[in-house]
Length: 440
Ligand code: IFM
Image (cartoon, rainbow, N blue to C red; front, side):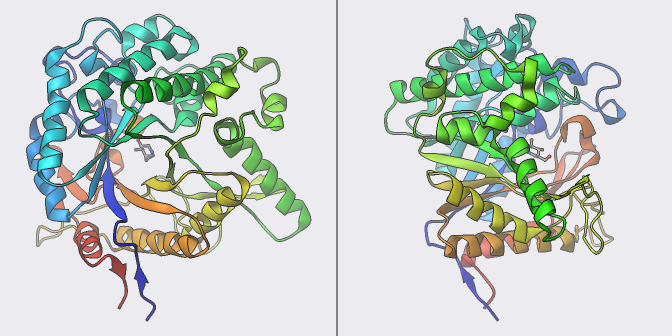
């Protein structure tokens, strides 16, 4: 049996995001965010679910950190709710909000768990949205100021700082398809938001480094591999074109200093306003890049192939295809000069049932994780510098427009009682972290 041994300092962890788990949406001086507004708007989220309480992590974080210890996590990736700290997005600080993250970080350090912090995981303060949100360049400066504030408070204990989680989702699902907050369906806004998020990233990197030069600073991108439906040259070309269209819009400016030419064709008259100096600001050297990977697209000349015979699909309707993760890591490693990579999210949603024995047997999630870990190991043998892996997610949580209907957790959450139960996949993950290897 092949044994896959990981480097001794490999950073195994799990990830969450503020709006998806914290709850306490209007407690202790927290301001409203665009996700509070969106989820409170009838018809936006499945069954009218909201993050008002979610996993109640705001109150239960000590229990959740105990859970992390039980799993043996070496790192925990979480995000800050900007409106908890700065209810108006800028201006007066809410000391209770800052204190919460202070306590959380202290407790993580005491548990010997590396905090891996994300500054923006989609919950923009509503006050800033009322001024135009990310379409308004002033928001970029507010973000940089907020980033510096957080570094000044937590930079003595938090080493890993991520500016944005998945800017493409924030820009296009929030402003083009309207499925996420703020819910616009306007390509002109979406492209300007996409560019401004990059500008905000650049300003924030400068602000973070200005506040503390000893930190590791990066960004998190979500990437889907584009595989050709067949080996025909036409399908191969179609897959490559789809990759360029869908996946290089953020990779290229960040790591090549310019937008891909295809972006200009695709955006046409909706191409955003780009100021002199923006591209250099965006392309600053980073200490790491986070990659969120869930699935791939299979592309033929007629477009995306929706069902691949013999393939397994998750509850999100995403195909399970671990080898595509290896191919994608190798591809980006070849195409860009990248800093060290962390897999900052990977996981799957399946219909989990609590069994008569009170346990959650989730063999499909366990296999999903195992196969993706193996493919990452193989990519590392191919020369890709992967330093750590955060499973999405520590807990079942609020899955955005799907509300609580999709469960991604290593830990099951009973939303009525808030009882946490580690699933079989979580137990298996704990053992993997303990031994640091698969097989043997
Ligand atoms: O839940 C999300 C997360 O917030 C961002 N990445 C994808 C996950 C699953 O859809």
